[in-house]
Amino acid sequence: MAAALLSIGSILVALGAFRITREPRRLSTGWVLLAAALLLAAGAAVLIGDLADISVTVPQIAGAAAGVLGSIGIALVANGFVVVRREGRSLTTLSPMVVGAGLAMMGVVIAAIAIAVPAPAPVTALAVILCAIGGYLVLHLIAFGGYALLYDALPSREQADAIVILGCGLNGREVTPLLAARLDRGIDAYHAAAVDCPQPVIVTCGGQGGDEGTCEADAMARHLMARGIPAHAIVRERYSRNTEENIRNCLRQLDIRGIPADKIRMTFVTSDFHVLRTAALTRRAGIDAGVVGARTAAYFVPAAFLREYVAVLTTHYRRTHLTTAALTFAAFTAVVAEAALPPH
Image (cartoon, rainbow, N blue to C red; front, side, top):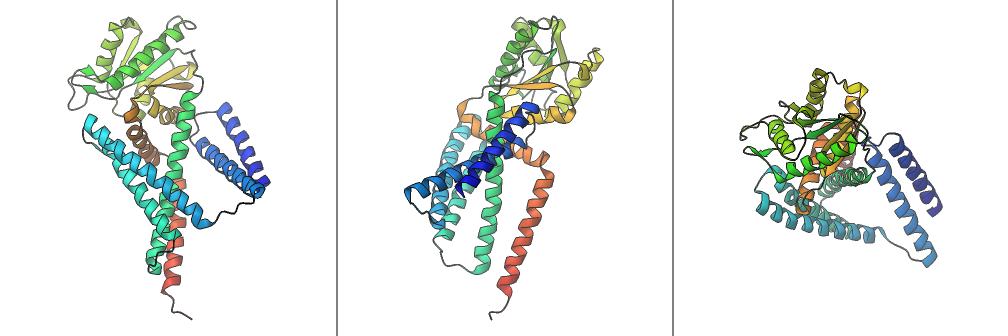
């Protein structure tokens, strides 16, 4: 058993490495690497157990899983209080509390199932199915978050003809610290590109929100010019409201400037938590682009990644979600039907 698990895990590691080398912007590579890690860990555990003559029971595994989920859940709830205190209340800042509470509750339910707490069969079946759905979402989050971190750590390509900086909101007419970090990262990318390309351009992306005194693209351009970027090198995209529009509209602005997007190399600059989804969207747009990320304050990272995770759930993997939902519904229906049958 150990040899089989380790062999399959090693094959998946090789497959994941091949996919990264060939096209690193595929979100599904995260699932390949997660499966590899789980199989290698399981194989190592079985091998150690065989060598040390240690047997592990299912309740023990469930208890360990419950403890891990509970600990992570408590940590996320604590982080949520810090984020809300510093950033105010919003769907994004409240997400660590919500997810943390859900993980802690999931840990309690798994522990109750593991120790066989008496409960009616339909209630137990519902608890198992809810835990299965929760487990699917947790694995999805690990696959996405883990690969996002790995993608952000990959060597970035310095050669580029266009640097595209994605907006993320203003404070009135001024750039926020989060946006300033993106702009400063974009300036570094511009200077690196200028070594190879004599006239790179910087595209500032972002429209005007209802509580903003100007459009993001103009505020970003002022920040860049104050730090030495020449005005003629800046292309302003003033109308987008989200990442997909950022990409689509910046391509249009480049085309207006006589810079065909299908014939140039591009580097998109965003925040580290936003890198992987941006990369996936550039791949969907069919352009030759790399993506680099500016660092985010540590306390805000969980909330930011959870926001990105929700966005990925709603914009990608639709067939995976539908298949999982169908299988879950079928399993629940079968369990309820069996529970409703009269005893023999």
